[in-house]
Length: 281
Length: 256
Image (cartoon, rainbow over all chains, first blue to last red):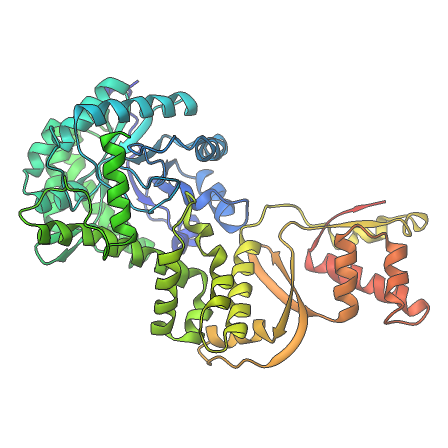
């Protein structure tokens, strides 16, 4: 299921945002596919579901969640998963992703992608939950690396090693957020290229590109700015190392027009396609 | 309790009460100050994210109160209302009631404004259903009219406001400032196409709409409208209301 030959390549995409609904359906932008934030569509009806239906009928769509809390220690929320499953039944996403993080304990949701220590114990814990989720959904789960501002003294492996082991043990897929690698590399002083080199290439099925902001010596994952030069450089490294991987720009705030984002996405094409010309027709 | 759970509880405690706890001891850092500086990025983001959600759901309340007063009240709400839902869509559900308890001036009118904004959200993404077309009434045989029962569209809401709250909302959103005029009335909110609409209801129509939602048959509806209309005028008023409801798209089905 995760062999490189089986990896779906959707091309170059964007995060689906409400302010772009009409433009997505009426303008020629060359955007190949869209990623919808799962929770935004877990509503009974109305405009969000109407536009998601229209978009999915014209473009490949993937679902990207923020509330799975795969590394959490509360019981897995199967009610939430049932809602995701019902949404996926009619959206028919190419895949379903969430984040390698936890979002709250004791029934609370901090609505953030929170870090945890990377140890053999936490790896076993997360792997068991990934398998339970994959069994429930009846499909592989894709997990994204998050930006972080703290690390833990008792971590026994790097996040990249953790992801590599997790993918090997569970056959889950990986979503590489290149900006998040850069942000965490600056905040924790590690080698971003080495991080990408340690990932199992065949498991990486999607790439996020985004911008960030600076707060003193720290980089903050704000996703509210154009993709900066260090992230483009790291993307080129990832594209060379990983081969053809569906790539998209994820912009969450200060969102410009669809045309502006589509033009930014063209830069990803110009970087990656020459590297992949033997693999992508 | 596993070590991971203990770390997560300490981490979450820090996000909820950064001034009172120190966070997990295993967070790496050259000094306690550096650990706190890093944890504070999460704590501040948590607070700001939820305030932004409230700003998005209650833009007219923010406009009426002013940005800084809104931020103060929203901060208190965030401090006392941790989210328990996977989706932020429902985070502001208790905000209108919270405003009532808050010491804000004009709180009763502000609460109404908040209730109105939350109701708009409920109409906005309520379940989808086809509305009955206007010509449907013409297809009902005369002998079935007395027993006619109507089923409202699931996106319809009816609300009673003491102030001219929907007009206040429009004024604030247009940048004209908030004026809170006392004007008790019932209001109907519904979805036409994908957009939220509303209009005020007279006392007769408000009563009739509530009766209709309670499955009162058409004959009883006409009888009830005699409180406001004489004789045949009651039936005419009922038919006229039905036609308007169908034109607005607030009826899902007719049963008889």
